[in-house]
Structure formats: C-alpha cells, structure tokens
Length: 479
Image (cartoon, rainbow, N blue to C red; front, side, top):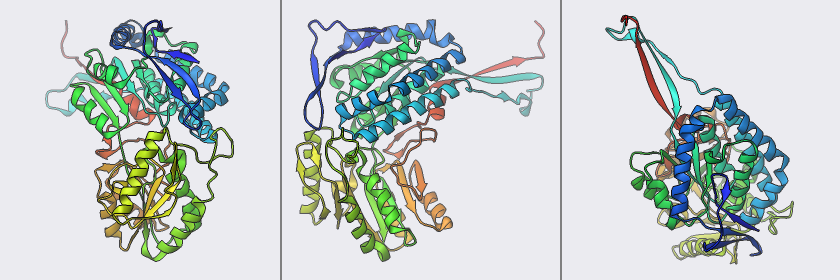
C-alpha cells in the first residue's frame, strides 16, 4: 500500500520524492510506503488553507459544519472494524483497544457536530460602568484561521480528532501532521472528511519528517494556532518557536494513583492493571506511580502482581490479546535501560523486566527513589512503581514532587478525604475512585507545570480555536 500527503484534496506526485516504510510493530511486516512531503509542499498547503479559510470556511454556516462532522461520524461508524484493524497494524495496539479508540473517535465527531451549533457569546451590561448608559455591547466568537495539528502515535485516530474536529466545528482550516510511525489511519481519516463534504482546501495532510517540515509549520506566519500532543522536549521547542500564535500543548506525565486503606484491593488492582499496562503503558496518563497505604501495601502488591501475570500477551490482531508490543524495538530497548538503571540504584523488579524485540513484559517495580528515571520522568512504557506511604500529608507531598501534573487517581471510600486530597494535588485533573488513565472526550483535559498548556475536550478546544470580538453601539448618537 502506497500513501501520500494530501494537499487541496489531491495526493502528491510520488516522482523523485523520499519515501518511508511503516512497519507492523508486532511482526515487522510492511503496512505502507509513505511518500513524504517537503517544505514546498507544506507552504502550498498553508497558502491554500489560508485562502480556503477566508473564501469558504469562515463564511460556512454552523449547520453545514455540523452536518459535515456528523456525516464523517456516520461514515466512520460504518467502517469501524477497518479503521481498528489499521490502528492495530500500524501501532501494535490490541484489536479490542483499537476498536475502543474508533468508538471514542465517533463520539468526538458527534460532540463536535453538536458544539458547532452552540458557539455562543454574551451581551455585556454596559451601564455597569459610569457613562455606559444607552450603550449596547456584545461579543461574538470568530474562528482563528489556519490551525496546525501535530499528533502522536499512541492514539492516531482519537487524538487527531481531538484537534481536527473542534477546529472544523469552529470554522477553521487545518494543516494536519500526524506521527511518522502511524500515518495510515490519518490518511484514511482525511479521505473520510472529504467524502463527508469537507472542502478540499479546509484540511491538508502533510506526512513528512519532523526535522524537515516541523519548524517551518510552527513558524509560518499564516498559521494562527498550533495544537500539539507529544513529548516535553518537542513541546518546549514549539513554544519557543511559535511566536505570538495560540498554542495548546499536551505533554508528558508520570501519573500518581493513591490507594488508602479502605479500598477493595482486588477491584482496584484489576483497574490498575489496565491503568498501567493498556497499550503497553504508551499513554500520557498511564498509571506510573502507585502509592499504597502501608497497612495494605503487602496485600495489594501480592494481588497486583498476580493479576498482572494473568494478562494475555501476544498477537495484537487476536481478539483475546490484552497486551502487545511497544511501537518499536528502539523504544522497548530504551525502557529496558531505565529498568536496569533503577535496579543498579537499588530498585527491585517484582514481575516482568524482560525485553525481546518490541515486546517489554509488564513490569512492576518496588524500592524506587526519586533519582530514578522510572519515577522522575515519563516512562511511556509498561513500567509501574508501587510505593508505600503512611500519612495523607506524606502522599500528597510525594505525588506533587514532580515536574509534571496531568492527571491523578485517588481511591478511598471517605469522600471528605478524597476531596481534601484532590484539592491539594497539583494536577490538571483528579479522578476519585477511578484510575488516572481514564479520559472522557467531553471533560476539560490538560496539565499544569510541564505537562502542558491549555485544555482539550471538545467544548474547551472549540472555545480555544476561536477569538472573542467585542462590538459596542452608542445608542445616544444620531447619525
């Protein structure tokens, strides 16, 4: 299968262009050959996106934008299995989890379709200020222009739609640069939008190497907003290079999950197996640190190890598989070096730790300290550390002792304690009696500290992809 960037609805001529091979992380079979775009292609896409914004999208009524999004959702629902198979083949995600990603993607499109028709503003009480009598003031939300959407490999469909769907709902055009490791679902998604009636100039797919097209995209003066999900180093670079553009950054995390002594150990352990090891831990809000009250520490650890070792590991295309490969062998090797480094510093592997090719076994570690990468940084791998604590103040301090603050989980049947702890955690979001890894597509999602800037979640992304304009009328004057 050969795929190419799509500019103004047309695929690039592949003659004399560099190509890149996408391989299945499980068996290394070729999934697709990608024809790569260059800077000239990027500039053409941005110019066309800029023109289409002013000529079409800015003037397109809300109901038309809503209809396009709804039709795209319907088409995606019809082809759910096909998209799930694509995600599994290019990302190595177990098929049942890929299917869940497609179902969430359909929901994101439908949320965006609804919000396209409810972008509301307000009337300002002008007479609240001295001299404001007989004046009328109101606001209106206007689309920004051209949005650069840069997406990661771990949720190649859903996280792309968290950027593209709100941008369309708000009336913007998009330059879409998907992850190099997972471009096939992006290619199919763009085709789906055009089939649903989106003008060709409203969405441009740029598949190129980050070092070639990344900086020119972020720095281009016709780009009005950059929305990026990925690593902290890349996000920091985007922030430095974007200038006065609006920026939304969804970056790293090492999410804490706090377990007090009144929990159902078996139930919470089962949830945290999923929380730490779904998609081999390659999730921004994966449960990376589990803090367990000293009185139940041994019991929880024993149960957690037992349930982790029950995971069905194997071919991600098998419907029964729960745990598959990492995105590539290099990432698995990188994570293994982090495990080895922690062990040298005194950590203990309770289960897992073995690496073969792109597979890294689900790994539980204890005796960890804050100078170890498995605690201090984002592992983005199937590695979780279990740590005892004694007091509420102690576990809050340990949880907050991080450069990150994206999402956390707190488990207790004491509601007062849960709310008290949630209030003190330095996080963009806190779940009570739910794993940190849980995300719905309609709540505000985004971190504090070095976990990012801005919020996603369809409603909140739509708002950030518009600009508020004030209009005032002096009713005293007669012209």
